[in-house]
Image (cartoon, rainbow, N blue to C red; front, top):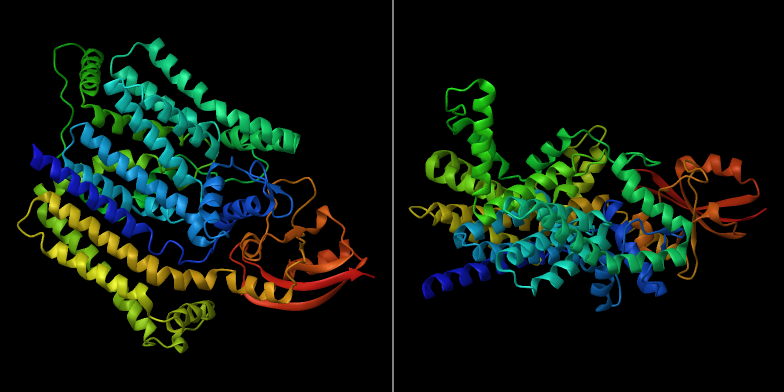
Length: 584
């Protein structure tokens, strides 16, 4: 018994080390290069600048589109160094992922799941493409997913043990989810909890009563925040809440919001579980299929009814964690197929539950279709080796920029130059060591159990991600980022001056105004839309296609060009120009 306990503890610590190494070393290496991350980070920045932690104004005129729990976390992480950076803004997502994986492991152990399967499930979840990407991003989705999943897992422990100490923890987790992305954060986990209780023999009224009680208790803190924010921002805030929580669900928002058919979610799950999706695809061609067996001599309808009843009884007899993982994955996936608005990150809470069954499938493939699994393992090993090797060749200048021609020659040349301009550094050394260790672990797995093979496979994926996060992505995405342009603007414009912004494609009264989110973050939230103010003089930034519409709309202003930037903005793919302006 002590030996088993020691093994579980060893695997738990191994999982802790894996999560930390996989996420934290290069969390802040990549500059912001899309509008999504700085849009969230600037909310935390405005909290620290203004002291308004309820509903701060950012980008000159915007109220935050989401409740503030994630932004509070970013602001708190940033307090330690006195500023919001890429690292501090992404840290809540990374910590949330680590907590989710570790709690999942502990809950699986408590449910008498083999500790090796629990470890592999945690490692597969951690290294799945979509989860890893979200864990390394300054977005609300990973924090929401962690709160959702952990609340469901702890609820299952409460239902199994009836220890009331779990209830306030569940309520706080649901409150945090509510304060991260609205009511769905508390409602969806309670739907999963209610379904689990019903399949575990609870009466319908009792399951509904417990779920409603949890939702109501979890709503106290969020309602207090909503009321305070309404007092501060009025009807504009109220409409924003209605738009984000009702109109988004119905697909009736004033602007396009990632609308897609339900099949889109299937595609994102397949791509999100890469590289492990390849195992599932291989299994489709290696597993033996058989038609369902209908017993009895009744008609087709009668035999079908008996078959369904038999499957239903099997479902109710499933072990606790198997049932929880199944209904958690199915209910959350189906729920996010309903709204017209669909994004891959909405499905993040599905991954920890689906990873349990995917891990079982991988173990089956390793034991029953070993040659297929072996080929897949070597494919990942070769990829893990190739990434640092190719990076080293690029940094050594083996590929000259003169080889590129055509439409994207300048962009490709800039990517190559980004490798030669930056020093090799500790990140590259770390990637080499991690890759060598991962390949050694993979080679050592010969003649060992399928669990060892699967574990070594996840270590290879961690090494691959380290090479990408530490060496490749900071260089390539650094070229896309507006950081250098923002740095030039900061040198040209005095620090006490605002920078006014004009966009000809925005009409007064329209919601979801586009901003230069990345530039605005890097210069300290100083860009303000001109449309809402009528300054007499100052600095102006606009796209090259905005100049003529601006002159036509505001003939009273005189513009003097300060600098045209040759970099295409990562936010809206436009070339920007900085002007000074004054009244004629």
